[in-house]
Length: 261
Length: 106
Image 1 (cartoon, helix red, strand yellow):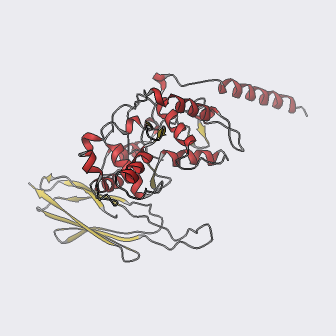
Image 2 (tube, chains in turn purple, blue; image 1 turned 90 degrees about the vertical axis):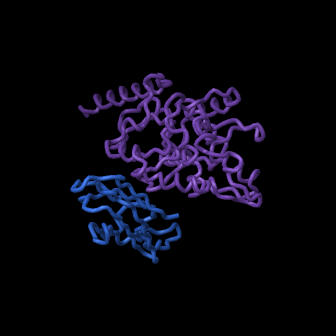
Image 3 (cartoon, chains in turn brown, orange; image 1 turned 60 degrees about the vertical axis):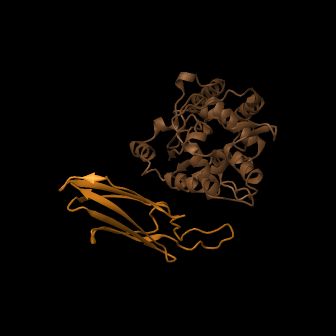
């Protein structure tokens, strides 16, 4: 019984600290850091050297797909877009982008599939298929080192919707993205460092996955961890969240394809 | 779309120890996993790798299920003569992949 009063106090103080930090808000622009900064030396070396970065295997396959004729239109990406090193430079840095025809924001994967269905008359690639990841990685690679851009006024509603989703408590654990990635980054969740969660290097080669994966796969991964029902691949909510994350990471350099633990 | 990536310096000095890096895409399915319906996913791994320098084997390795997907190997050798490095990967289900890279010794 004697120990119970201090224990109550500790719980009360811990709760108060939680409430206080939940109001922490956005990370100041100059304090933002890519997850790269917190990687170990080995993982950094793996990402930096193309011949040891496993994602290069996808980039090379993506390059082959770029030049390969597809669909009943029998047309390759290269026939419209030409040399990707010039035409795709900076493209991944500004996606998700607003699509005038769809009248909604679409991410890079959806852009590739729209091109496939509308220009190549081909069947769209499945989300997380080797082909879609390969093309996304190849296109993303052309923007490596360029700053993420999020200035399109037409994206504002999606960014706002994404921000709401980021702040919204969800799932059985009743947590929001912001509680980890805005308020408690740099601390540890068990043995793992909590990163700020900037989507600078997608699609990433995640060592845990032993595979390349998209930003949406990563978001679903977090949501499952929060015991929430994850968004479907390509859902408007998922794209809105991607748009908010890219706005939040504006100015940070693209690292695609990045390596993460 | 299995394809190997090899990184060897283009030119090396005679007697110099140089690094060889190899990366190959492979799922390295362990054989210990099951599908959601309880069916065992059969083992599909690379079981053997070797590298020869002008026909002489300089490095080889046996692989086991604990090796991760897309195996990355790095090892060293001494530059003796100009010639070729030949790489060979052999695995389950008749998997076989080869690659060769020229080396110039000055």
